Image (cartoon, rainbow, N blue to C red):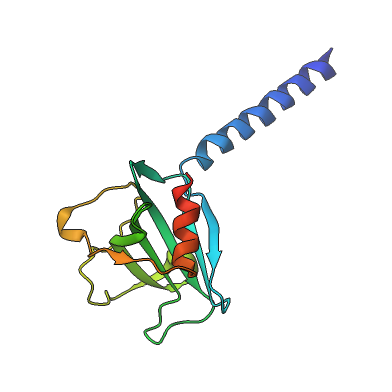
Length: 153
């Protein structure tokens, strides 16, 4: 009987631990590869856990991860982008550049864009002073791959 009680207690602890992990993991981003540049130098990830759809628009947190640093030292950037699924265009609301992969490391100075710097939160929030102009998405590019992947959500 003591053995059965001990086994039951261990099983309960194990299940409690796994349930706790499941709850904690939902609080973190779920970065999934969406596309890779033709030259294989940039991998583009989207946080599928925080995607937000409003009619023909999709709002998504995106990470651009480079295989080598850009001339300004940027290895990655994190951006809150808005995609227009019918007009084939996109714009950034927030963007920051980093000297390490996956939006980590030291934050680099802004590149003179009108978008606001990203924060630690992955909440989808837009402030009018942060929006950048719409840019067309060219056919046959990673931008098109990304738009198509996100617009099916």
